[in-house]
Image (cartoon, rainbow, N blue to C red; front, top):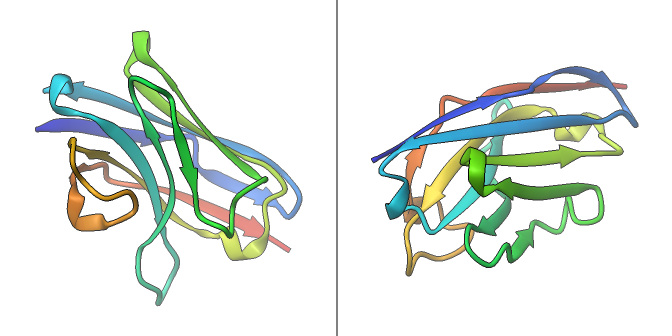
Length: 124
């Protein structure tokens, strides 16, 4: 298993920015890609972004494309989510997760390790 710890959440005004971090430890060799998901109150958890560790190939949900940027620092075993032009509808708990090789991007069941989440609140 991979242990994941998110940080960087907080309260920000609409139009502002936040950067989330996800530090990974444990069986890191079993991790093929990392993803960010979010869950707003009363809604299902949804895919936000994904990045492959080796190639750096990235994927984004349509709702965040052009505003969010996912990146990774292999030396620090950390994944980041830079969030710009934040909107009130971005308010959610953000989770990072690790995906093994062969999994489907964005399908939650294919992410086998999850962090505890970090709250992001965007005020209007």
